[in-house]
Image 1 (cartoon, one colour):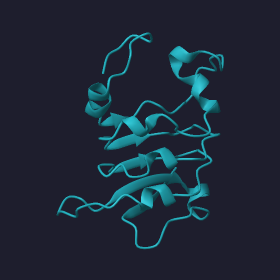
Image 2: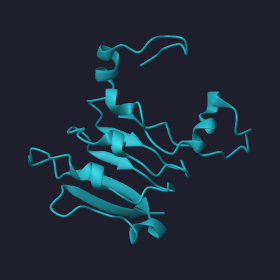
Image 3: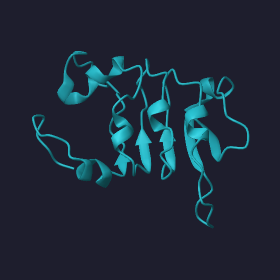
Image 4: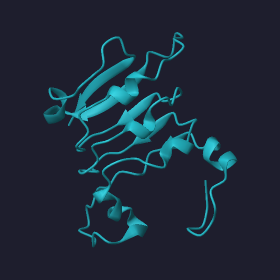
Amino acid sequence: MWAKPTDQLSKKKAESVTDLTVIGVLNEYNMPDTLPSCGIALKHLTNLSGLEVFTNLKIICLDHLTNLSDISALRGMSKLAIVSLKDTAVRDLTPLGAVKHVRTRDDRGVSVYVTHAMYDSMIVPKNSDIILWKQG
């Protein structure tokens, strides 16, 4: 999805997006925190308000958004298959528990990736289709 910062996001464009893998912030080059062109300014995000319009998301990577704690905007996104939350403040996966998948041979549920340090403190709703994976 190529657009200029001044473009309006139509419902049709939002629904065509299935993959948001470059939201996370990894400041390897010590760029100024206020440089939005690098996505670094997003590190102060605490919730995902506004992402509700991306109803067909399958993959979302939110790694390194260290202040992100609320993922309730992902509630009900029934096509989500992969959510990466490494190095975030997210601990409650209840919004993802509301996502019910029609199980097929290839669809085992929502794979959620977290760091080892986060794993034991995650709140995973019972009887959900969430598969929690430790990485890094």
